[in-house]
Image (cartoon, rainbow, N blue to C red):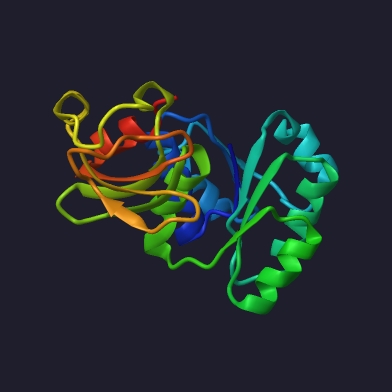
Length: 212
């Protein structure tokens, strides 16, 4: 994963990705920010995220996903997305400060545009790397996630105690395409394509959402 921009948001995303066990290449033009993050991140460099040749030189082309976390400098943000797009990075996420900025990023090549506050950095990290479609974490380490039903549990009951005890999570309910939300009931089965809402300790929710 590549993270361009190490302000509050970018630093939060990069640090969270590292905690989740992912290889992260982070960069910023500001040497002070690079030095500050050097003790937390394994790969952090001072570089211009809008320079295609510089990006190639540090190996950005070897990554499938990138996050452009630049917020205040809209020109640098747009040019960085453009550079990544020219390199044909398969999945580009970008931070936008407003809707107009977001539209420009989409037209420039961003596949996903987010409008975060600094506190949303960890949530975005979960969305980028996993099957989670949404994620909320509370202060006491408890999380709620919306995620695709793991293949191994297709045909099992939503309320199956073995699933919930094995993974230390609770399946709150299910959302099916074209149907309303259904709370977990004894006679409800998990089907292919189901989106589950699960809750539990954050680490256990993360592991369940990562199941194939």
